[in-house]
Length: 270
Image (cartoon, rainbow, N blue to C red):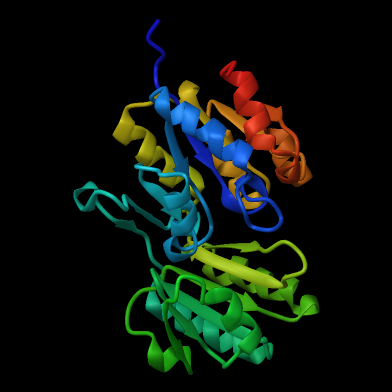
């Protein structure tokens, strides 16, 4: 019997990756088996491409990849597939920098695909964001940014996060979507309004002509909600937040307990 191909979308942090940021041997084996059977496996992450390409290579994928929560979608192995980059307006970003400064935030970062701009010098954050060795520019974003921006991160004091988010909702709701990172980071992440992982995944699904009922998506955080709702089969990780578990069709074990491998083995009777 010919099995119709599924599209299997994997979030990275807290989902495919264990807490030590590695992929378990078991998960790698199961994903390899499904690829051999003709299923499409793709990564859908909030990370930039440069910080996810090592996992793409490790799984030997040959599919488009969704980065920046859907703001950047491209095919690493096929330049003709297209590059879908949905960016934030530079004027709006500069306004947001002004307001963030008035809150004395720790830092503001702007990412333009694989270039990173720091408003202030910041050893701690530079370590985290230099994975994949991007071009780094440090200094006033209002002077240094010359192009529209893929995403902005505001690293604020914990007590200021709610009021900065209120400002963003009140003033920039039309153009900006913002999310709060999971603890311990008091980081607000901004991308273009209406953009999320589901938008990116839909582009990939259309490319392979896979209908929703044959899409399986795994996630653990609030940036996975739209993707899990979009997929015919949304799977929440055991370590996921309550909101993700509520909208998911299934809950599997945690990222430390091989949740992806456990679910896929069972689902495809491997």
